[in-house]
Amino acid sequence: MLFNLPEMQIGGIVAEITGEDASNFYSSLLINRGSRDGVQKDSGVIAPSGVVGQITEVGPTWSRVKLITDKMFGLHGIVVTSRIRGIVHGNGDGTCSFQYIDARDECDLENILVTSGLGGVFPPGKILGKITSIKTDKYSKHQCVIIQPSVDLSRVEKVIVLTPIT
Image (cartoon, helix red, strand yellow):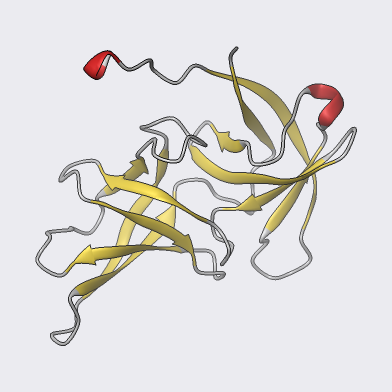
């Protein structure tokens, strides 16, 4: 334990995808687990290859997952190699932006981003994706960093809804 703080204890509920948003870039998915199974609103959702999104609605036997690529999605992320921290936001086009990165910080293409653990939804170290584009503007103090999610959200069939172990 770092600084004598307890580590986040996480369990999970396996669910299957039963539906998807009708938009071109799937901002949400429906799963076949709900309140009867222990799913709670705001729980994180992952697949074996990384972060999928977060529960936004819960019915008795179903739940809606807002995808990491949704424009209203955001969470804290960290670059594995450099430990640079920022906010990951969905772009609504199948990608995400890594925001508030100082123009002087060194981000490299293909660097992997993971969850930082801040916010309590996801434990630290869950893969978010890799950096595919970096743009700098000499008039801005921040970089524009684009991330390709590690999970192919158009092909995911099963997910795990994270649950705290009490």
